[in-house]
Length: 119
Image (cartoon, rainbow, N blue to C red; front, side, top):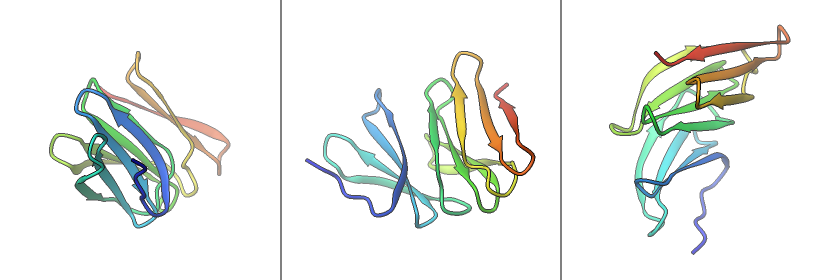
């Protein structure tokens, strides 16, 4: 059954719990049950999102937001933003290195990358 989420930008799946994380234009991440399509939670975020990455080891979701230039880190057990990482305006392209527990964010204004490491 197709699930419609208006203005979706990023999508990642949590296989163990059967949930989909959908980053939406309305400044929110919507959590859906992938079996039923029912909404489990909506987490407000700092702005319109782009790329997201789920970290199953830490049960955290990283959501890049070009304006205001942050990565909101969502606790996927409590469905809250529990950390906000400052990047720079326009930074929304990211990559997650699961083996090293590092999130890389491309900073377009300075043409370099920033690295956030989970400890």
